[in-house]
Length: 178
Ligand SMILES: [Fe+2]
Image (cartoon, rainbow, N blue to C red):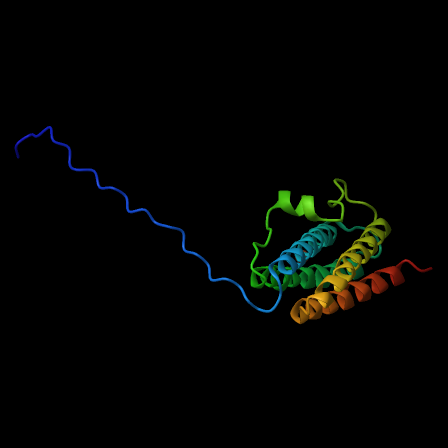
């Protein structure tokens, strides 16, 4: 084959315009959807943080209550793990990205990160009571907004989450009574 200096004509890349998403018209204004999505991302961050702390405590719990707590924490972290998905997907249905990185979760969460050193069993229980109460407060604070916007699916989700967190807080609190 003869050598040629001629470079093959460079193909101009076809400019692809980003696909424009269809406008969302579900009867909730864009500003309400944005505010609710932000609030739900906060709930997602709280829930994920509490999930991780609970799983951490499942691994690291020690002492005479080991069996009870190891098992109880497993039931609780499993429930929390399953809860993050519907929260994130509600954010998506409202037209916004769901957060999902440690950095974003840390920024948006109202709960502290899990302690660096595993605490004693009773301190673990107290930490989880405070965690469930904090998530309940985050969920409850969103109600005026979703009610105002007639966002029933979000209200339904928040109601379910409140029930779980208030019940878990009660059960954990009961373990602390003498
Ligand atoms: Fe396990």
